[in-house]
Length: 238
Image (tube, rainbow, N blue to C red; front, side):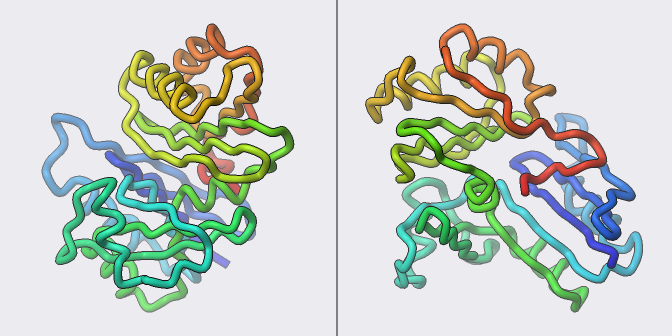
C-alpha cells in the first residue's frame, strides 16, 4: 500500500511517501522571505501528482484550534470557540474535529479549504487529524505534574498534565531561545507547576532545536528526550 503522509506547519509542508511502513521519500518545504506567495500550494500540487496513492494521512499543526472536553456536541459553535484563540475565516477554512479518548478531550481546528479540497478531489481514502491529538495519543502520563513539548521548525506545542488530567495545551511560534523559555516559565507560574516537582519531556525536532533544549536544561532538573525525528523514519509521532 502506497501511503502519503502530509504535515502542515505554520510556515511549511513536510511529506513522506511510505510503502509497507518503509519510508521511500521525504522532503520539507518552508516559507522564507524569498519564496513566492503560493509556494506551499505549488509544492502540495506537485506532491499530490507524484504517483497514485492508496491512502493519505494529513496532520495539521496550524495554530487555529480550541480544546474542549470529550462529548461536547455544540459543533456549530466550533468557529466561535476557535476565534477566542485565533482569527478565523469561515469562507476559507474548513472546521474539523479530532477526539482523543485516552485523555477524554477533543480538538476543534480549522484547515485551509484550498488544501482540503485539493486533497479530497483525489477521491481516495483520506484521514485528517490535528497534531495536538496525535501528540497527546503518544503520551504516557506516569507522574503527577508533567510538561510535554513537541518541537517543530520554528514552532512548538505544549501539554501540561497533572495526574492524567490535561491542564493546558498550546501551540505557538518559537523563533528564539528567549521566546521559548519565557513561554515555558510563564506557563509554569500561571498553572502553579514548580520546576523541581515537574517532569519535562521533549519530542520532535530536538536535534534541530538543540540550543532550545540546552537552554531549558539550565533551568529544569528533570528533562528527558523521548523522541527525536529522524529523517526517513517518522516525522509524525505514533
